[in-house]
Structures are given as structure tokens and as C-alpha cells.
Amino acid sequence: MRSGRAAITTAAVLCGLLTSCTGEGVSDKPNVPDATPSTVAPPPQEPLTAPEVDAGYEEILSEGPHHGVRQFGTIELPKGESWIKVNCISRAKPVDLELSLEKIGGFSVGCSGVGVERTANQTNLDSARKVHFTVVTEESVRWCVSIQVPKR
Image (cartoon, rainbow, N blue to C red; front, side):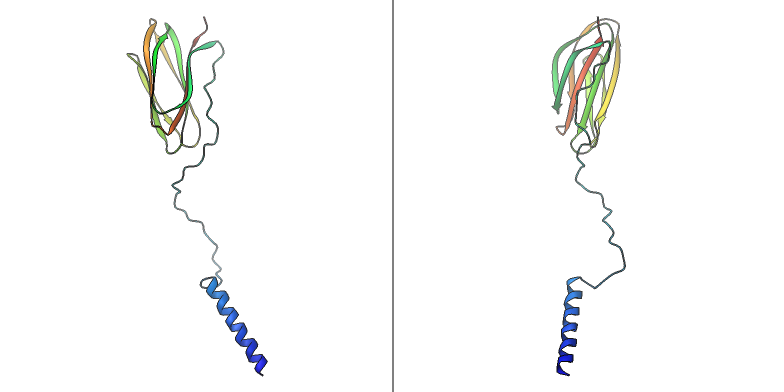
């Protein structure tokens, strides 16, 4: 009889150890992942590249990739049509990028923290102008810019 009691005692001890290691024992409930949003930004889904030059156009300015604020010297925009193209991506949260052409105007681009944003903005000038071009954004934003005019 002694060996029977020893086996039952051993089984009881093992059962107690197993349930104490796993918490409260076996549960029929599935393991549900935590639904709280992550504070870690996902990695960019694609590489940042320069804007494409359209057929029939030439670049008068091509810059990047850069990050943060950048001021450029004098750029001469010809009379007529010009395109300002920007590709950008933020390393974290979505951030705005501001482009300005002195005495002409500017525009804003929202730079995503997930994929490259591609934007093109057209200007039509009555006469050629020399302007200062500026890009203003946070350090976390990487960007490329291209100013294109019709080939002459």
C-alpha cells in the first residue's frame, strides 16, 4: 500500500507544480492580442526617390534627398508653365512640408509616416522671374524636389 500512496502523493505534487507554473491552470479562452496602438512607427514601405521628369520637360532644379529646412539660392523661372514636384516621407508621424517661392506663393504637402507622398504643383508666370526657393519641415522628414519647365 505504501507504494500506492507514494504514487498518489507524487502525482498530486506534480499536478500542483504544473498548475502553479501556468498560473491558474488550463483555460478554454483564446489568447487575444493587445489592441492598444503601438507607439513605434512602422518602417517605410518604399524607398524615397527623386520625382520623375516628365517627357518634354527639363529640370531647372533637382535636390535631395534632404531632411528638414533648406534654403536655395536664386532660381530663374521662365515665363509660362513650371511644375514643382515633391516626394517626401516622415520617419515617424505624418508631418507637413512647406514649399515657398518668394513673391509668387507656396504650397504644403502632407508627408506620411508610412509611404512616399508624391505631389506636383503647377505655376504659370506672365514673365520670367528670379526667386528664392525654400523648403521648411521637421528634421524627421526626408524629401526630394524637382522644378521642371517645358524643353525649349
